[in-house]
Amino acid sequence: MGSRTLPGTGMLMMVGIALVLLGALLLVSPVAFIGAVVRLVALVLIVTGVAQLIQGFRGGQVAHTLVSVVLGLIVAGVGVLVWLNPEAGSALLTTLLMIFFLVHGLYKLSTAIRYRNLRGWFWMLLSGLLSLVFVYLLWKQWPLSGAWAVGVLVGLDLLVTGICMIILAGAARRARSSGHFDTISL
Image (tube, rainbow, N blue to C red; front, side, top):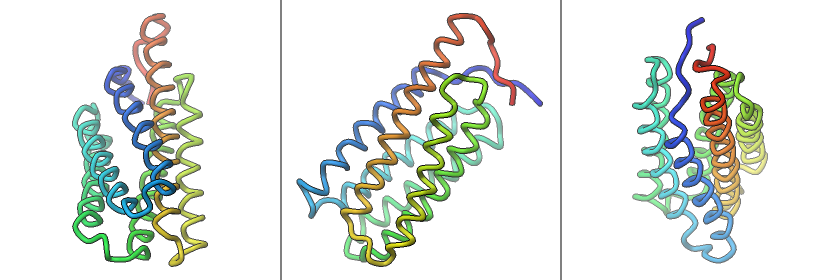
């Protein structure tokens, strides 16, 4: 197995904070702004996809970069499609989000395994499992899941993912400053 230097903690922290804020906004929006949920979900997906693309290009390994870029393109593409056609119906949105949660959950699980030497890796693992639970919940309600359910689940996913990224950034920063290790075994 190879090794990789610790991830950029500043970027990880920034993306984590942005995801927490966007997730919190989505959790509030279904109650306060029911008509804008589909547009908010689309915007969040676009921002998340772009952030994933940026993070992918900052990665070190070709395979990780490729997965991140493909995931970012899919997420941003879904966001653009939802933005351009909000009347497509909640069934289409629910189906697209099940795909998003499945791919995103698997990505978070693989990321957790890659960074298992860092103290906060377990939270990313739980976040990935939670995304897979969301797939199940959406599947059980499909096609009846309304925009409010989709908004709440996306909001929860972003909130948890953001918190996990903040925890990982802090763990990476502490590991780097303590000098316990300069690399992470993959």
